[in-house]
Each structure stands twice: as structure tokens, then as C-alpha cells.
Image 1: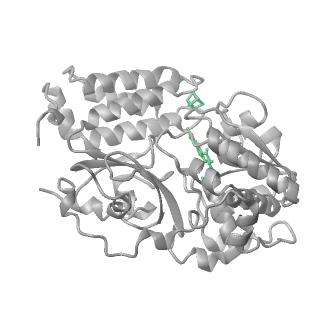
Image 2: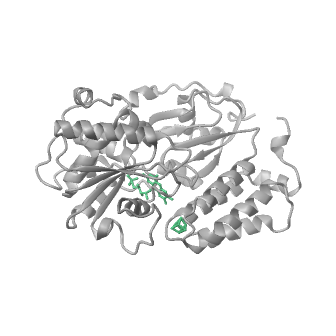
Image 3: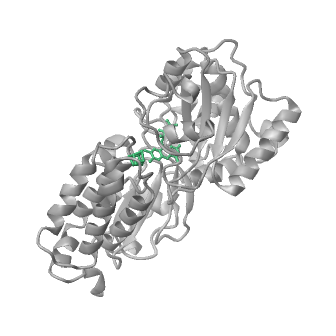
Length: 418
Ligand SMILES: Cc1cc2nc3c(=O)[nH]c(=O)nc-3n(C[C@H](O)[C@H](O)[C@H](O)COP(=O)(O)O)c2cc1C
Ligand code: SF4
């Protein structure tokens, strides 16, 4: 019996409790006065660009999924004329709750980060794009408070995001802010060069901006006190599925998968696998090795995975991985903007073929057909939605390969009591 099959045998976590890593979640408040008491004053950067060297030293990476170095994006945008800055709080990923939690509990931290980013790139206009009603209301109230207090030097507009999977893709964000549908565009140029109305545009996830606000206050050295050399600091993990306390847990990069699950109180059932990063993410089989695998780019690279937007969903041993994968693929196929061939034709066929496999329809060539369709859609859309879906499907076929063989023989091992 493996550790994953018997969560009661998982060794107690002897590392410092995750509470020691609380940064973003350390001093939640929706009041501007209380926020100002709980945090050091935000420094004023006299000229655009003066914060960039400190930001580079901090090594801050984006928390919206791709993990791109923040200073590189800010540097590129700062080099252009009349730039704008957008805080991306769309959180279209169905398994993620971190952005709305942060926006509802600490809206001023995100808005501080937006100001620092705007001043750093020399923007005279900023937007915050938010989907979920409680977070939207919280940001609206926070902006009203800041306006009354005269806090912000760069004016900020709040824009409502539709609650769809792709509304947070950066060109969809720009399209929505320009007043069009929140659909990805076939971007010929990088948005850092030509985005909102052809101007250099910084689109940064709201969690990234909250970290940026803390770095501005406390410096790169402080930020690097936890995390790894390549990925310093903490990230917000959204843990759901068969765990004692599903929720948001702030963790340092490099913590192990097991510790993240332990922070949620541990598993409520024997586990077989874990989905990391979100619906565009990667499955890992859960065993003694992966339990201690670091949540970092380097740690997950051998599995083809990444921390992504911090989603962690374990799968119970009693569940069928193929059924779970087929449900997610069906959702992803339904969420495409239906603008490009791979989404219009490829994703629905991919979802149907995987559903047939999950439904134990033993047709010759079913697995090859799923693999072929995943290859056909990969890299062929205007945005990365087909690529993310293909990656998820490939990972499902690989991690649940025993289940695939069983299904082709008309059996589902999830039906067999363990
Ligand atoms: C289909 C799709 C959906 C996305 N949804 C979001 C989202 O909801 N929120 C977000 O911050 N980034 C989302 N992204 C990533 C953004 O395009 C962009 O990279 C990100 O906002 C940049 O912020 P960061 O560098 O701070 O991570 C999505 C990307 C894709 C391909
Ligand atoms: S690849 Fe799909 S989701 Fe992306 S723009 Fe094209 S149709 Fe829309």
C-alpha cells in the first residue's frame, strides 16, 4: 500500500507551519485606514522605472498561469509611449478561488500594486478587470474609498469581466476593456508593444500585483526569504476535492505537494492522483515520490507540470480518472470562443472521443484518435486554449494508462472496491 492509498500513514509535517509564510493573507482588511495601519507606507517612486532594479532582484514571476518574470514585462511596457496597465482579476479557471479571495479580503493590496506598476511604466491610466460579484463589489468600494482619500495618482477604472474560461486571456481582457466581447484576438504583435488601442499594455494578474506592492514596501531581500531561487516568494494555492478543508493556502514555492495537501487538513480518502495548475494543467500520480515533489517549475518539470495558477485537486482512488478527464475536456471544449478551426472542430471531437473512452466503448483506435486530435489542435489557435486542452488530455492518457487499458476491455477499476 502506498502513502497515497493510506493518507493516515502520511508522516506528520515537521516543517514550519504554513502560517509562517502568510504574506498576502496575513493582514486582510477591506478598510483603507486599517490597511494603512497594517502595512508600511507605500514608497513614492520619483520617476518611472526607478522600481525596476528592485523588482528584477526580487525575481517576482506572474501568478496568472505562465509564470513569466514580472520585471521583463514592466521593462518592455515602460519602453513604449503612453502605456496602460491592467489588473487581471477575471479568474476564469473554474477550480481557482484565489483571485476573488484576495480581491475580497485585501483589495487595497492589489490596488497598491496596480499603482506601483502604473507609476513604474509611466502609465497615466489603469484598469482593474474583475468577474466575480463579491470581488467586484469589494473593489468598487475600495476604489471609492481611495478616491475620497486622494490615494491614487493614476486614475483606475473598474471593468466587469464575464465569467467564462477564456475571458482572462490577455487579448480577451484588452478586447473587453475596449468595449468589445471578451474574446481572444489573433494578436500579431505582443500586447506589451501594442495592446489596448494600439498602446503598450501591461496585463498582470491581481495576485502578482499584490506581491509587487509588498516588494515595493519591503524590498527584494525580504521577498526572497522564502520560495526557491528561480521562483521566490509565496503563491496562493486553491485546494479542492477530497481534503478536510478545501480553501486557499498561501505556500512558498518549493514546498511539497504533500505539504500543500496537509495544509488543507489532509485527504479524506485514499488518493491516486493530483491535478496541478488548473484545467489546462497536468495530472501527477500520487505516490511516495510525488508526495515529496516540490511545487516549483524545476520540481514539476520532469512530470511536464507547473504550479500554474496554483490549483491543486487530488483525485480519490475510488474515482475514475478517465471520467474526470472527460468531464473537464467537455467543459473546455464548450468554453472555446469558436473563432478558430482547432476550437470549432477539434476540441468537440476530442471531448467526444475521450467521452467514448471514459464510457468504456471499446472501439479500435480510440486512444490513437484521442492522441491524434490532441496533436491536431496543439498550437493552431489564436490563443493557447487548444494547447492547454491538448496538454491536459495527453497527461490524462499517460497518468491513467492502466485505466485506459481497463476501459478498452470494458472494465472500470473505479467500480472495483479497493
Ligand atoms: C485561456 C486562457 C485563460 C486565461 N485566464 C486568465 C485569468 O483568468 N486570469 C489571469 O490572470 N490570467 C489568465 N490567463 C493568462 C493571461 O493571458 C496573462 O498571461 C496573465 O494575466 C498575465 O499575468 P501574470 O504575468 O501576472 O501572470 C489566461 C490565459 C489563457 C490562455
Ligand atoms: S484558439 Fe479557441 S479560444 Fe483561442 S481564440 Fe481561437 S477559438 Fe478562441
